Length: 279
Ligand SMILES: [Zn+2]
Image (cartoon, rainbow, N blue to C red; front, side):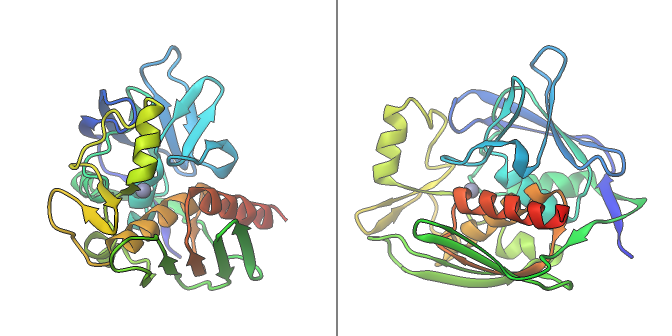
């Protein structure tokens, strides 16, 4: 039986937060068995905590936002993806503001941070889960279906962005800590130019730059460095899904078919999985 894992030591990462544009520092700390993934706002009185669970999600429009009481944490999905893929069951994520650094818009900096900490095997059994029967979640044009599989997490994903080169994109990926770093973690965030204009008008993405995302505009992809993969968009969608599925609080197993997934469908799926778990 595989055992739970936490980090071997505290590690730190600083950078610019995507929406507020302020400098943010994040610490990852070891946590006790069965603690799960907990975000802690050290900049607030009493250092309130938010458990990274679907029930605590309060917004899914521009990323996955969780909250408990006054404590709100934005854009948790890339950290969650790196923790899920690394098999880290217990960890405290200390934040000095409402958002983690966006870094290069991928989960690679978080994965490297986790690797720099090293892992410790704990004595409690790791908790794995697959759905007892096929589960389907539909949200507009987006759809996720999960079939039971006790052995592994397979994600088959299709994306489609009108006016984007290399469209549609497809990828099938079996979650494996050995391949995640090369295949999925480097996939960066993409933003549609139309959405970007709207976000800027709303006073958001103040920390956004071509260091942190690529922009889809008039049939082209604008980014600072060349694309890391021709199908980088679908790889990032899989990255986000691995992160959002970790809002179940367990290491997920199953055969997932994701058609144009996004945070609203991903988080709804995590919530539906939790419901089957409670039965
Ligand atoms: Zn993302």
